[in-house]
Length: 300
Ligand SMILES: NC(=O)c1ccc[n+]([C@@H]2O[C@H](COP(=O)([O-])OP(=O)(O)OC[C@H]3O[C@@H](n4cnc5c(N)ncnc54)[C@H](OP(=O)(O)O)[C@@H]3O)[C@@H](O)[C@H]2O)c1
View 1: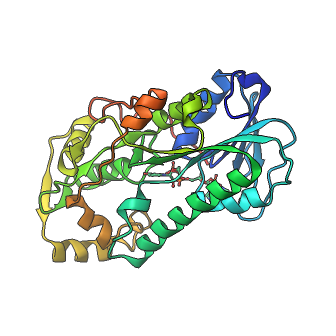
View 2: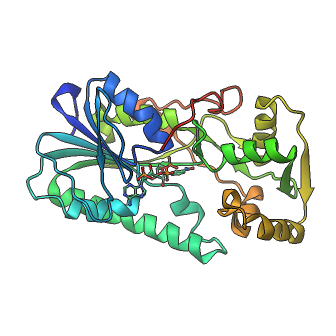
View 3: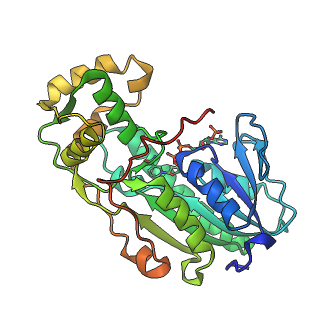
């Protein structure tokens, strides 16, 4: 069964449930009537409506015994081997899984690690589709752009933390690369929307945010939300590289790379019109929403 008409009849499994998308998806699944099992590598206490299961997806199997939908929010390369370990007749009818537009934007990155990530994502998408076809499972793949929304991201939240700590934000050159930040709650809503829309089975969608703006303007909007006057400093590449080299010694900045900085002037834009036509996807604007700064801290 590809299309769900009665959510009460299906169990929802959520991998990567502690992610920012999971933060918004779990209550949405409960609201529409799913019984939910959420997975994490850490042990967590069950709540009234959510069963938490401790599992490392690298090695574990899903004990699926009743008609189920899998919402896969964990890294995509973990999914095809997880499915391969599933018994042949497990009643899993539908998968909604997250890939990333990085599979397009990082293919030509100067950083070999980023090129490897892009290749792994593309390979995982193909393997997922093959595994689903072989097992008769209906699939939908989402490729979001830059995700934010509850202070768990390394983009908007990182910029906000940098501004709070140093009072300014550095940009390479003018920082004119276009961005389309997408709120994690809009992605969570999309997960529910595709469950009831037949057109969305066996399709992949690029899911960008509702506003396209220059990196520079994204940073300015964050300053405004923090109620601070924008103090943006343009820095040349050699100085930026030196600054990054030293910052990377601190855990909060360990993820920074030269390729990431170079992208500040590259457009990373994707249409989401197919998603709009197929299931009414209408993501919110970036400016003028709360950017997640009012979310309650999450304890993992
Ligand atoms: N962040 C972005 O800007 C962005 C952009 C495009 C696409 N995406 C994709 O969207 C999805 C969600 O991204 P995100 O940034 O919200 O989440 P994330 O920070 O990448 O978190 C991923 C989740 O996966 C779980 N996980 C990782 N390895 C695992 C393992 N071996 N076994 C079990 N669980 C594992 C983690 O749960 P535990 O730590 O609780 O085990 C965590 O909750 C991912 O597929 C990501 O690639 C993200």
